[in-house]
Length: 361
Image (tube, rainbow, N blue to C red; front, side):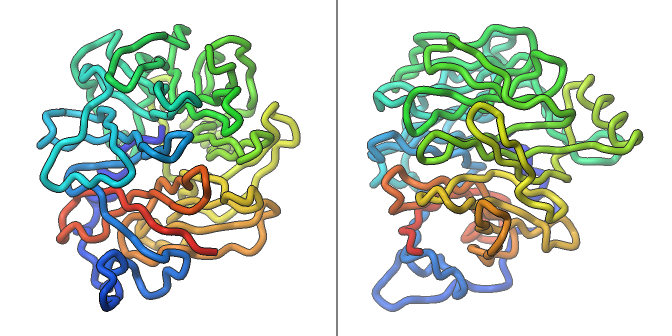
């Protein structure tokens, strides 16, 4: 799941206090958050200041952003969806909540009309926040709630349509830049596979069919390709462990690589072979590179930093240089800005906040 539990796990392991300081830039306050090696950031602005904030996605006109947060100061006990204008920050005020406030939500994404969004929610089964198991047999796990379904809501929080009603997990929906298709993850076949559907929920098609967790998918700028993260258990022991956890509604997120395919599932291939956890991929505006988060260089599970790689798996480049956590990178539709989540500038605490960078190649 593209959710905040992973942030909690990472932050529980570390103090989140950076020993390396970002560079100071005279007369440019926005750039004081940037580490010296982060050459792709022309400027950087922090927009949230507390709790765990992530999964931030731009409206098609780049004027608004929807994101999820569990900031207790905003009156929520688990992830809910919030709305912001691109020029806003939320240090001393609360953004409008646009989910129901019930259950747990995940993975909101704007629809092309800029007036509605899709998101996953558990509220139909239970209005309370579901339990969050963080460990199983000594290993870190993500819960895959079978109570998740995908809904369409307006920007005032009114649900106008339910897009999925199959038994099992349906979530992680994102929308093609062409505005015609939605890709999502579902357990309706007994495994965690990718599916696409029209934005009205019709014409559901299965995209992947290999054993393992396929999720966190995004379309390329031209809508012809999909990038996603996946686990691929191969040995008998790995397969048994994966199936046993999935039967309990759990997956391990610590061993994932990036895969790419055409939007219909054809020409599927593995893009990375780095080890550890490679996830939250997103296409560069050119459509020729992938930006993603990874801890493949880490010896103890952290830090997570952003990296960029060509579609042929070459020219791997490190983009961020923090010592804790950078993830969930998403480019604006015009390609000029990047929003992502980070532990930087959190005073040594565990908060994960949203940052917007002016991007430069």
